[in-house]
Every structure is written in structure tokens, then in C-alpha cells.
Length: 443
Ligand SMILES: [Zn+2]
Image (tube, rainbow, N blue to C red; front, side):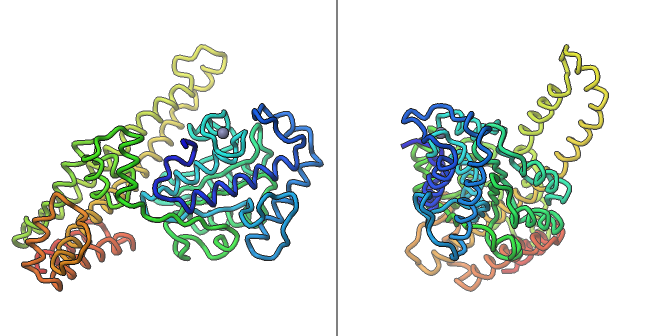
């Protein structure tokens, strides 16, 4: 069945949870907006505006459900399945590429679906998935963090009554990048949620460093796991029309990162950059080559980042120029142009900080590739019965594993992981990468 959850790869448990919650949300909605929908699921917008009393009932239902999550409330007769109940705040956790934001968007679509199921074809589903639904807002950090100003403005707008849909949905990608002040602004909204507002947060984990304990305690958690290579390959073949052998290779090489697997399968330059990263271990013959390799790795990450943001930068610029009335003939066009220089400048600033973040992400992916190589060396040295991450460099990894012995492979793997941790802790990337390359060379 192809619906809004179809692209959530290898996440059967999470999809099951979200389907049941969406059904429960639809039940809450219909309990408040009688009569129940016709079997054909015709438009129900009229019901929303004219039933202030019914809205109050819906609030009570939703609150009861939120309490069920906390384990204190009795089952509510108007809710189909109280244990699967709808609640106002959710956190999607999982490793990068596991589909946190895909899951959040799919759930948002299911909440706005006129059939309450996430059919994937009705206007509610369609506009949510294409990012044009009036009651679904997406916050993604433009720089390395989400600031308090942005969050306050968002919370304020989210408190309004849904204009056409069933819920106001706020999706916060990378909620781990909220500043402390922004987190506090969000906490206030999550503690006393507006009746028809749903917050969907995405974060790597529920560790206090990612999401504050107080926000966590108000949310229902949907854990996503790293999808298997088989599941990723299957979706590349089915959805993107990629040849099965290429899909299998890319899925394994991307280590469960769906977007990266697709890029590797489709973009020859992405493959070249990966090849350059995996060539590092055999290039390390001395201090000079180690430092050269560090430069090459950082430059490759910069190139990868530039490629990843170039398209969206151009699209945003074009959209803003259109919005500012370039080519417009309406009465507002002339007035709009006056403020346009400032808005373009703001956009450039946001794009620049996004580029910084993209560089970090690209460098991290390169380090994950490199860690995969040493992991392959280690597992082959141990003769562990597991498939290699990088099938194409498996012979090289095996040769390394024999030369270094398990201890040497493990030390190198640790050097790569320490480099990731150091960059995460704000050590300057070049310094961390140079230190790692020297460790990899010394062994
Ligand atoms: Zn739908």
C-alpha cells in the first residue's frame, strides 16, 4: 500500500504507532465535529469554524490522551484506542538518515488527511507533503542553532486556530540544535499546548544533551532505528528506479543513511568524493602525507557541502525574488521592492550559516565512511561473520586488518571516532582531522 508512510524505510514499529495515533486523532476530531465523515471523505472544513463548543470537547479529549501517555488517566470512551492516543508533543529520534524528518512529515500529513489515515492523495496529505499546507510549519536551523526569536514567533503563530486543517502542526527538525533560550520558549508551549496544536520534534536521541529532560517528559517518543541495507536498497529500487545491484552497493556503503544512499547511487561526483575518502588509509606514509590527507578530507567535505546547498540556495533566491515582486505588475510590486535589498541580505546570511552546517555534516559523513573502512579491517582480522560496510574496498580493508592486527585496527577506528567527538565538542575541524590523520599513520 502506498501512503504517506511508504517512504519510511524499515521502521515498521514506528509506522504502526503513528498510524494508530493518527486514527485516534481523527476520532478526537470527529467526536468534536459530528456528524462523522461520509464514506467518501468529502470536505469537512465547515465543521471547523462553527463549533466553538465542540472544540472545547476536543480539548478535553486531547488532554486526556496526553495524560494517558503519562500513565495517569482512565481510558476515554470517545477515543478509539486510548493506549495509542493522540498527544500534543512528539519526539522522533534515530541516527542521521534514519528518516526522522520523513517520519514527522508523514505523521503531519496523516493528521491533516481528510480520511484520517494518511492516504497520500487527498488535499490534506498532498499539501502537507509538498510543504504548502497552511497549518503545517517546518523549522529547520539555518545555522548551527535555532534561536529564541525564531522559536517565539513560531510558538505564537502555532497558537492560532487551524485555518483550514484539523491541527496546527509544528515540525522542528534538529531540535537538538535549539539554543537554551529557544528551548525554554518551546517548553512553555509544550507545557500548556494550545488546544489544536501538535509539536513534532526531531533529534538524534533523548539524551539530555539533545533534548532537555523537561521537554522530553512532555513528549511521546517515537524511536527510529537504522534501517537495514536490504530495506534501503529496496526503496531505492522501488521509488527511485535505481538498478538493484547499484542500489545494494549504495545501501551498504551509506550505512543506513537513506538520503546518502540515493546520492551515492545517482551522483558520480558523490562517488568520487567517497573514493577519495576511502583512499586515505593507503596514502598515509608519513607526516607530510597525513597532513595532505587532512587537507584533502576537509576540501572534499567543503565540495560536498557546496553541492548539497547549491540547489536549495538558488531555488530560495528565485522564490524570494518572485515574492518581492520581480516582474510583478500589481500595485504592491513597487512598494515591495523597497525592502528587498534587506531581505536578500537576510537570505544570504541564512544561506551562509546553512553552508557552515552543511560542511560539518559532510565532514561527519566522510568520517563515518572512514570509520567503516577500519571497522571492516577489524571484522576481517577477527574473521567475524558480518558483511563489510564498503564492499568495494573490502580487499584493502582485509589487507590492512592482517597488517595491523585487531588491536591496530581498533586503535585506528577509535582515532576516527575521537575526531568526530572532538568536532562535535567544537574543536576546530582542521585541528581534529590533522590529529586523527597522524594517529592513523602512526597506528
Ligand atoms: Zn489523505
